[in-house]
Image (cartoon, rainbow, N blue to C red; front, side):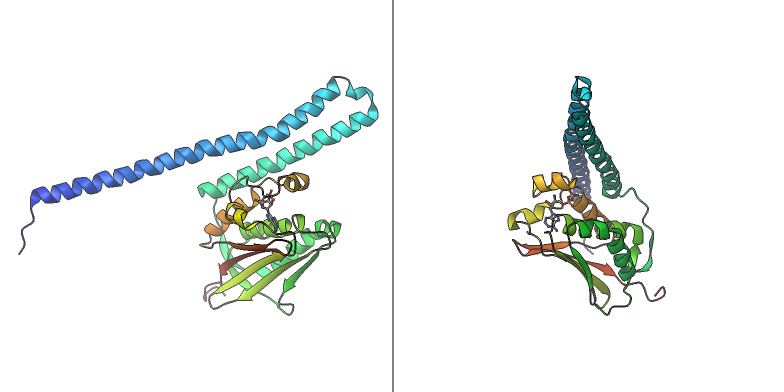
Length: 264
Ligand code: ADP
């Protein structure tokens, strides 16, 4: 029987303990950096609509109110900035909940085809304004069961389909494809819009990252939609992939589990 040198053993235990503590410190440091950056990003993003609304309201007070035509124009602009602020704060609340894992996920089996159809109805007006067609594939699909948090996954689909409409092109087409695999369902959201430059693709899931800043401002985007998508899918043990070709379109793909046998 080999005898264990007690000093060696103690040494090993101490060094294990120190490296575990070092890992904890590193993690705390990472969290602190994340928190500081998050706060800096948020205050920067909040400033834009606040300054804009402030500017319009002060110009009104300083005399623009006297001209009804100008007054109406400025009031509408102030209202638009405040609406943007409202959307931003809502998205921030959702993002901070999903980022910190501070939401209760309610898992269950549901028909994702039914959900896609509901979302198409919800976004129909928006799509019509751009003369964009919304279709699902395969055409003869009757139902497609998956397992997950329906409300959160509905947010994922809305964000991706809404993006495909607003960053796609006029007279465009958005296709949602549902492919049943062995134990999973593959979900693809594809548009035939202007696409995203290759070097920017890895960054689009970062919070506040905007590829086309002027287009994002025009359509009232917050730059948080895809960060929310990434975190919700993460909570479903799923990752999202994106491929894009300039002037051809963009394609997002992710997988969801099929319901367990005892539920299906
Ligand atoms: P937002 O919430 O402002 O829409 P997202 O986080 O959803 O922002 O998307 C980040 C950026 O990625 C957008 O500002 C836009 O520039 C770009 N983007 C997202 N989806 C598409 C798409 N389907 N086609 C082209 N660009 C896109």
